[in-house]
Length: 432
Image (tube, rainbow, N blue to C red; front, top):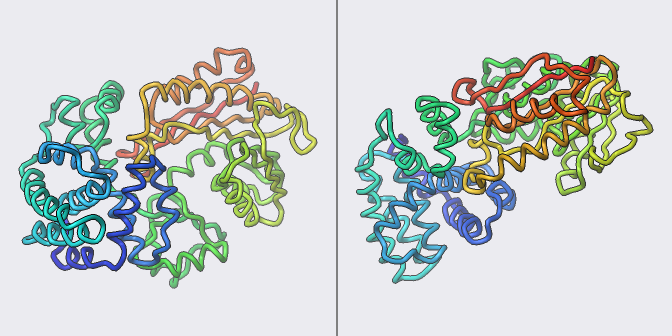
């Protein structure tokens, strides 16, 4: 719950609220990914942070708010009005002490006059008052609640709740749903051999994970400077799991098979200090960020960016299959373990997607295997916590012709509500 002072400041934050409303309109109408929309925002500092909080918060709680609004209006309002109601609903859920509901309602009406019309402002005035009352009456579902109830309150598609209940049980599913509604903190990986100094402690807070720090709010100038100087790379601590499993060593030849945008490639290069790193990914817009990240690798690392599909490549940088010490396949997946960051993925996923992902992941793993030399490592990782995309893929690979020469040496799936960071699945396979 925020204080009254914070609530008033948030409501009056210049530009953030109407920008968030316009982003929501595009998200509702055009089905563009939320993170891609946020990248178009020109705000900076506190206004940008508030815009992101509003925009992402409304998407996280979309199901709950939209469900209540549907009971209060006969016909669904046009999109720009619906965006106002979603933002107002999120601010009501966010809380703000005595009188907060009235402030939210007044601000929503004012914004509707600018974004829509006077008649729609009167509608918003009536709906927000009832919305505040309806949300206040809602209580946290009982410890044993049906999927429908959990889905409505925690804003998660019912079919996904049913899937999680089957995999994680009632308690695990509840913790997962609660976790998914929390805003994600910003983390930074410290890249230098020397630890942060006193000046860095002003904006960096230690975490349980070596070299990973939480970035304190209100310090973006320091963050931008440290990024430009190559001191840090912004990444969730969950990303370290694949790198630790890969265990890259100085002088090795390594393929990062799904490299873009390059965070893990940079982490590998920082670990080896010298050697060959082939950063491969299919052509696309993310190669621009990959190229920028590879400019920051240590001088002793020969980092080569390759646009292509590992499943079709016959040689890489003049090297033939079976000549690399290690290959990392950080495969595209459902993103089920990173829903705090990918706030709208739950609204984009379809039941058949898990099977589609698993099929593609198995193909990628099989293709990557042929590049690993005798005794080398093949690391498969996802940012999913779903069985089908982790154990299911590894089992399918090992049962296939390409997996006959490999043995599984370790496998782990980290659950975000237990780990305290993004969820991930990581498996180490070694060629005999």
